[in-house]
Length: 92
Image (cartoon, rainbow, N blue to C red; front, side, top):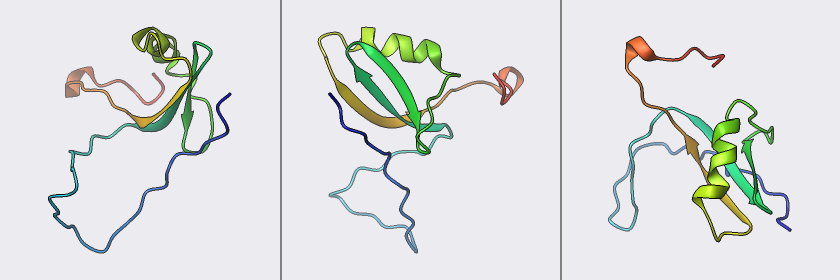
């Protein structure tokens, strides 16, 4: 059984830095979430500990994509790419 977990809070710094020991990535806008997969069932949980119901398809697909993984928690961000003309509304 996976114990209760919370997403890490964003840490702000005074100015940017560069360090060869760190890996940096481009920031894409999206929804920060924990993907909690337990017993083949996935819940996507917001940083406020609410279950994302709007991403039900993704929740159903993740356990199949991670065949052989029994219980796991993934911390990440769900991002989408679209053209301006095809951009979904905030209610989709």
